[in-house]
Length: 192
Image (tube, rainbow, N blue to C red; front, top):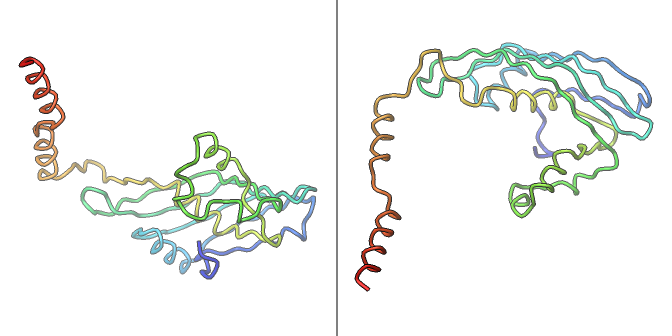
């Protein structure tokens, strides 16, 4: 997310003030924040979004944010576009470290192309950067919501439209051009 953009659901926690402490925090999105997040995630609505977080600051400055998140959302069915309500529940767990710089992380998807699987897994295990001792736990929760919601919501009993099914069958019946080339190669080899 761009540094110039203010998140729709922002709750800043200053961890510098609580070194060695454990803080419990319940955050709940307002109606306006829910509407703004719904627009961002292209949802019909977010009726509620709440998280009960525990923030633990270690003596080395690393901060763990964890706790349950729950939301009631309404998406569009991927086949009918009808509203599909969903209760989303997930466990937030993120480690932030002042020893990791934003410059150490890839800035765009192209930076990931040449990485091996082991390097990608190491990136996933790497802590998030902790900048100036501040964490926007609201944005953390919003990102967990985005990942936890059903990516292909489907209304109960909804099926693909007939036109899509006919199109898929037509594709299956199309001959494979490589099979034709293989057949042609065999014919040419027999002539020799």
